[in-house]
Image (cartoon, rainbow, N blue to C red; front, top):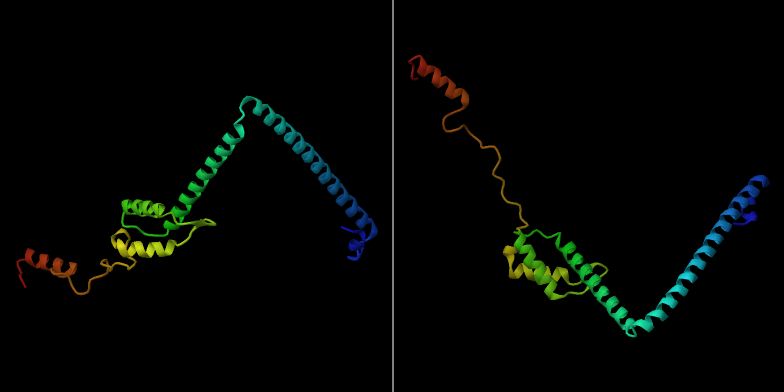
Length: 176
C-alpha cells in the first residue's frame, strides 16, 4: 500500500497518515510472526537432526524401517481412499438388496479400476457390464404401476346410502 494510492482516492492527509500507520503496524506484526515461526522451525529441524544422529547409534536400520512404515501408511491411505471412492460412486445406484450391493462392491474392488481425483475411472462402463450380466442385482428404473387410485362405479353392494335404505326397508317389512 502506497501513500500515493491513498491520496489518489481523494482522502485527506490525516486519514492517509492513520491508514499508513495502521498498515505499518500490521506489517510489523506479521514480520514478527514470521520471524518467530522461522526460529521455531529452525530449532525443530536442529532437534530432528540431533535425534536422527542418536537413532543411528541405537538402530542402524532405522531409516529403512521408517521408510517401510511410511510406505505401509501410504498404502493404507490409498486403500481407504479407493474404498471410499468406490462406495461414494456406488451410492447413486439402487440395488435390489444389501447382499447385491456387497457383491457388487466386492467385484468392483477386485477389478482394481484406477482411482483419480476421488473418481473411479471406467466406473460407468463397469456398471453397464454388471447390469447386463446380473440385472437382478439392481432395482428397476421404471416406476411400478399405481394401484392406489380411486375405483370408478358403485361398490358391489351399492353405496352406503343404498345399503342404509335397504336396511330401513327390511326393518319395516318392505323388501322393495
